[in-house]
Image 1 (tube, rainbow, N blue to C red):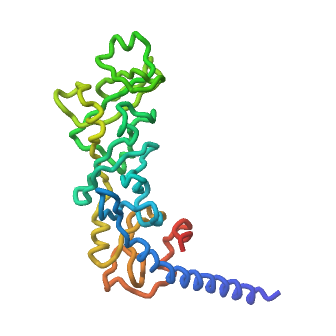
Image 2 (cartoon, rainbow, N blue to C red; image 1 turned 30 degrees about the horizontal axis):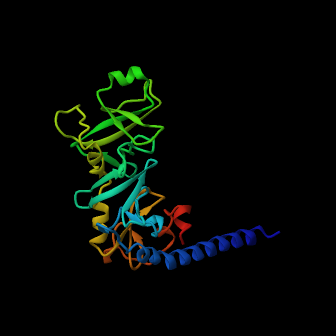
Image 3 (cartoon, one colour; image 1 turned 135 degrees about the vertical axis):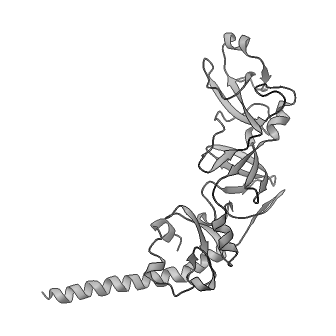
Length: 270
């Protein structure tokens, strides 16, 4: 067997594969720019772009967990850490989003027995809010010590105790922690208009640096998310299609080096 021939044939096969891969990538990467051009609008929420994406947009058009949906009532919702929230406002300049738990929009007590928690590497609370805890299925001894209780309007949870701060269930069956707008003396909970207080929601600030996206859009690109780097990337209307920015100085013919950093998940969209 001619091992030199086999070696050259193997090298030729590798080069042919890379050339095909480059062609396929370069012919589809411009689609990423086109597919991430839409902004999200639903009811009072309008013109929202990256890091958010709409339900019909590809995953790479938005940051993970920043998926916005528009329900049948023309209300915007977002699901974070197993809880659905109604989006009341989004300010992309200050990177602040105002949300309220969807399960308290029509009733006083949370229906999903899950705490309000966030990935603090991505979101954080603003300082004007405090936590309150709903305690479900408490024994009489706890109810006697509880400063307040509310009626939830259901047979299973007819009476739920409400206390200030974040607490575990203790001797009760469940506890659900919900942030509310801080009012009056810190550490106190007023049951007056509690349902309204919950429906007014609370604000969270997303933490990712917006500079990478602004650098992208200022050079004619559109922002997206790279699953291989877990960071914001820039989709360009021309070569090299995928870059930190789309300035003319950076444009060059795409080659293997321009796509080597793409993960298999990134390539699955091609």
